[in-house]
Amino acid sequence: MLAAAVRARAQVIVTNNVKDFPHETLQQWDIDLKDADDFVCDQIGLDAKVVWSCAQQIANSWRTPPGTIEDVLASLERCSLVQSVAELRAL
Image 1 (tube, one colour):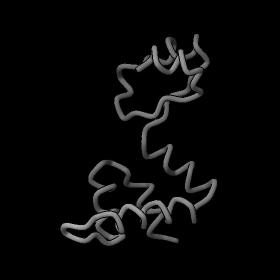
Image 2: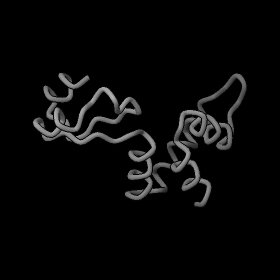
Image 3: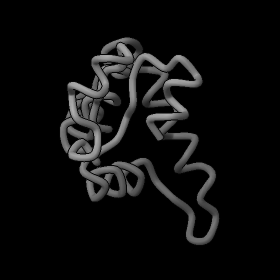
Image 4: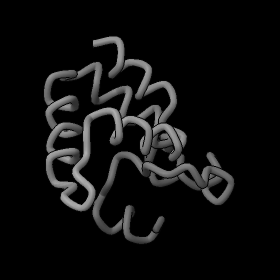
């Protein structure tokens, strides 16, 4: 993943696997590391309506069984996006 990020000139790697990306290694490539929850929280801070709309689109795409926004939020919570879900629920 680091090689791909370097090649793409990425500014950030989003992963919950932070142990495999030492700060010193990323620093030499001027790449930041964010866990998924922090990244989604940043996106909510930039435009909460867009993030909410994306969650709604995910719910709408679930057909068997049909999904609700609460289903999506519960799924995100199970994926460790606890703070992001709290912010979305507060909207």
